[in-house]
Length: 154
Image 1: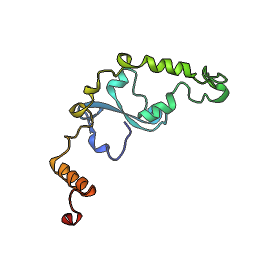
Image 2 (image 1 turned 60 degrees about the vertical axis):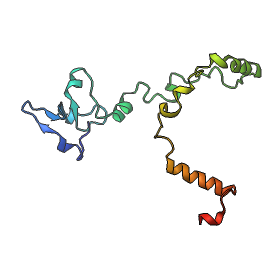
Image 3 (image 1 turned 135 degrees about the vertical axis):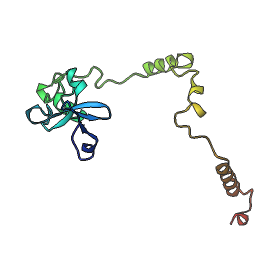
Image 4 (image 1 turned 120 degrees about the vertical axis):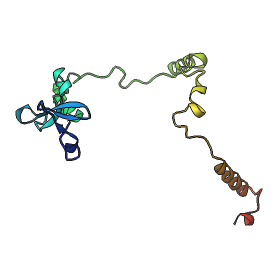
C-alpha cells in the first residue's frame, strides 16, 4: 500500500516494530527494499510477504514491472510475423445460415431463460413505475393525442 497523506493517519505503531491498520500487520519497506518496481517506500502486508508476495506497492506497479512480455515489442515479440488464421477471410453465406440455424430454439443458450432477467429479477430493477409518474404520463399522452383539451392543462 502506497504511503499517502490520506492513509498515514490510519496506521499505528506496534510494540513488535510493525505497523497496524484495521487489524492487519504491515511492514514499512523503504530504501533498497522498497517497491521492486518504482523503489518508493510503501507498507507491505506482513502476511503476504511471508507467502512470497507483496513485493510491489500497488497493482499498477506490479503490472508495469512484472509483466512477462514487458519490453517485447516488434521483432522481440513471440508473435512477431505470425498472421492470424482468419485474416482476410470472410464467412460464407452458407456458413452463416448454418450457424444461424444451429442457435435457434432449444439450442440457443438463453432459450427459456427470459423470466430470469425480467422485472424484479433484473439487476437494474429500481422498484417499477411509480403511480405519480404513471399519472403524468397518462395526462401527457392524452394531451398530445387530443383526448384532453390543451387549454385545461395550462
